[in-house]
Length: 297
Image: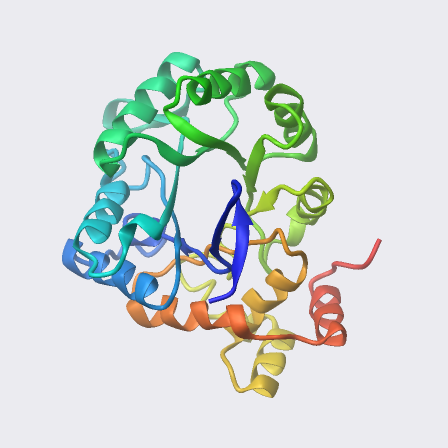
């Protein structure tokens, strides 16, 4: 597996988005044992980056469900689990009846981090990503709270998710140049709208982690080759799945891009992991970009 840099460490060029094991549009979930087996398959395929979040849960009421799967998978894997980079997220709280709300207060984020530390069974979170903006608070204040958690040693690196270019710059200003580790935004052929953020991160040596890089759960990822024929055709030319073509295209958009495709089955992540070794020509990358409305500046 080829490597890329995240928070100053080397990780696999393709990560695993663990969310579909606990939350997806189909509302169909593997058993806990099968979910653990899927994570094991990712690790066996060379994946060393796992992305999770405290809010990922089937019923929306069991905080930490997905983190528990990840923790158990690492505990029971027969490889060297110390080499695996686990990133988690927080900032979404649950109210009565599973109603979700956003809370960017330092007090809430501290409590969320402490719970994630306990569930993951670690002393420090490798990468803690602020999940979604709490529009009732000043964004700079939220990032300042995360910096305090970092200064206190609870998290090693700070990232943000679902952020605009403006919010990325605010995070850089608050954390200091070079201290924003990552930005995790939705990006795929279906949703290419974060190309400005992707390019902005590339100019500043910040890792960009596309979530739902294949188009999402509920059939989006499965049908990507049907909806976007250029990716199917390029995949066929290389003898690989359209999903591999999509991920290879995203990798080709910048050395800072680290897609985190989700998976509910071992076969899915095993196929996705192979995209790290698929080399597309410059003409193919241009063709695929233009097919989804992305053109060179």
